[in-house]
Image 1: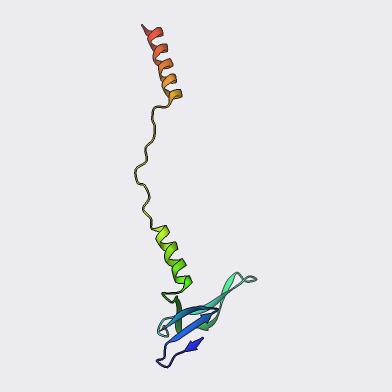
Image 2: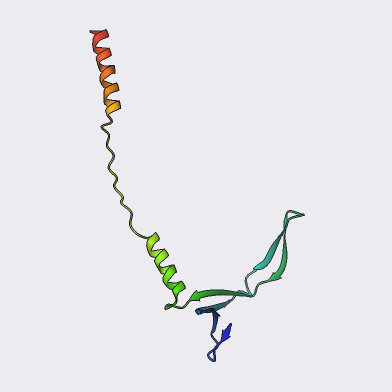
Length: 106
C-alpha cells in the first residue's frame, strides 16, 4: 500500500495499480461478524469505522477487462423471435380430426 504526499492511497499488486477510497462510517452501526458454526449464530468481533473501496486505474489491464465484461453484458439482444407455427405434424393431426368429424357427423 502506498500513501502519497497529498494523502491519497494506492495499492500496488504486481504491475497493477488500484486507487483506494476510504469513507468514514463511524456514525453507522456496522460490525464485523463471523458465523459460529457450533451455536448457529454470528459473533461480532469489531466495529467498523471506515469503508475502503479499491478501484483499478483507468489504464490498467484490470480496468480494461472489467469494462469489456460490462460492455459484453449490456449488448442488446434480439427482442423479436420468429417461430414457425406451421408444424406439419400438427396440421396432419388437425386434418385427421376434421376428416373424422366430416365422415361421422354428415
